[in-house]
Image: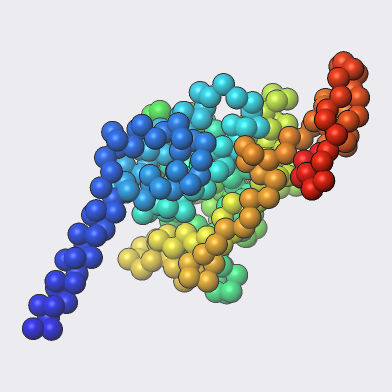
Length: 303
């Protein structure tokens, strides 16, 4: 009787899981524009999709962001927000991480690799160098398998960005991961340019707008996966989940506050001629015209 009862509970749980992921990819398509703008909507849709459809939906959202007629810094901010929400809600976070490195823009990856790195390994678990190496190699195999697909552009640079993420998590992983790369010497130079020189020109090119966008979002974005667990990453050659190597989801469940970040943040500029220059107060004149912004009222939170 007890066995029958347990089987019934398991069946109900399975049905609940099926219902929770009952949204079709076609229906989800109608929410792509909103998901591209709002992380909460991205997470809501992801939680209703199957594992395979989650990956396809993220790719569609990233494609939609690329086509938006908005500034480069707004695009990078939206990529970071949408892709962070996606990996948090993913049924398979390893596969989702691979989808991110395959479909997010290079400029977004310049930010994402730095923001994701602190959450890859949990320092309290005291992993050995060999355990970290085994796990990182397993994850890189999944990423490289995805970036090798025909529609992905600049696969080698995207792979280098992923290696860079692991290098930021543990510097000792760089040589171990690059030893498996055909063009490891060149990739090492790219990684050194970012780690030692803070340059991402190898990844995003020399375009001034894109480089400024990366720098802007890098400064304002919170650590994207602080309080996040990549708990299903499996070590190579084993069936065991990699949960012992990453943050505990029960202990680190809440993301940091999104202070001064995203599309609702206070506008910033280094151009003193702009009215939204962050060193000026409302009411100051600019050389553009003689109009003055309204005087601030008590308790107003913007400059």
